[in-house]
Image (cartoon, rainbow, N blue to C red; front, side, top):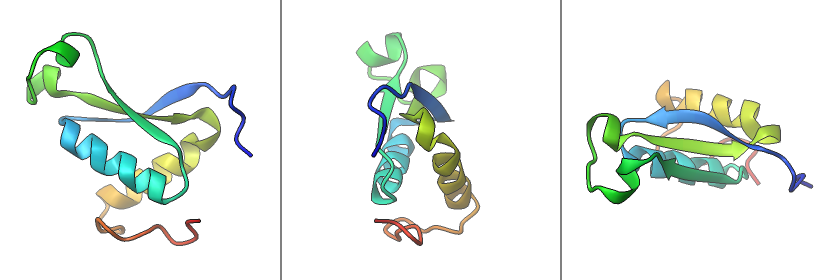
Length: 89
């Protein structure tokens, strides 16, 4: 059971909201609760490039190591979109 008091920590930062949402979905498919967020002005303005297009992926602190591993495997081409991580619930 996850500790609901766990802090949310940033495990990756992307240069676009689309990639952040793909990673969030991948993490959730692997049983890791995840959120995406955009900082400051990027929330209100419709920019999707540069610093205003940056998005963060957050997970609970207790899941951070596993989440970083899954993200690293995705970036390394070891996980294709639509493919679940081995051992996922």
